[in-house]
Image (cartoon, rainbow, N blue to C red; front, side, top):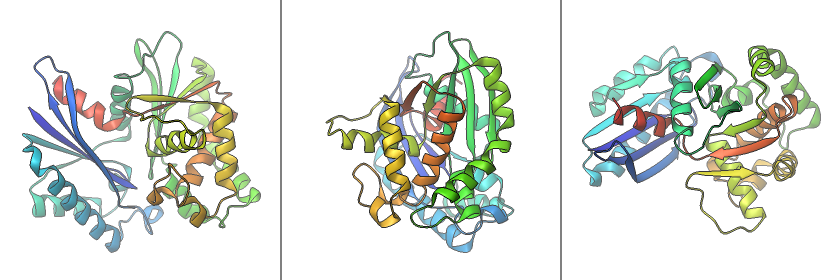
Length: 306
């Protein structure tokens, strides 16, 4: 059976096409992501603007056209924070149904966290010691603490980078005072995370979003390593810190020229770096790993085993 999973994120829309085998394993046939910026201009007002609405419809049309050659047996479309928190999110869902005859499953933050975990565990051997998994999105950030027995704790925080960017509207380049203001805002918002980290003591952070993919690719380019990340990449903490400082000092035009960073991510990556660096320092993280698998792969696993 060949299936396609479309993930309608707040910043990016992704499609993954796989062939599911008889033993429930699967082979990846195609993957593509396109920048939509669904939350731009309205995320903190809980609306999808007309411009973002149009970009979303065009994005779905592009992805559906891309997967036509694979003659998929099933299309599973999921939407996350950018749609579930918008007052007119259901209008977009209905428009997609009318235009393309596709049902969009608007999942909860808890469901999102579970799918992320199901994706990560396929390629990373989570051992006895608890790990902290983080997916940085445009609308929300999902945290999961897990060990070899499964999920110990999970929570979705409405602290996605599109929300933070719209709230703080930082200078270009961002100033040190603005960074401090953002961190001051984040600190009380993450109390539930701190409580669970105190209980489980994870020191290994696994990041699994486009932001972490960008961090890895930029580090690899800087180190002039010739490699492709198919599963995961361990990011040296010193390398991340140096990258973080470089991003803080950069303008958006300069970031668009950084090797390893897609131009569509240039606007959001500084906020993602601030968030990640804050977590690393606040929680005394000792190891950082980027996982290439996350929500889409988790959904494939769920479908294959249902």
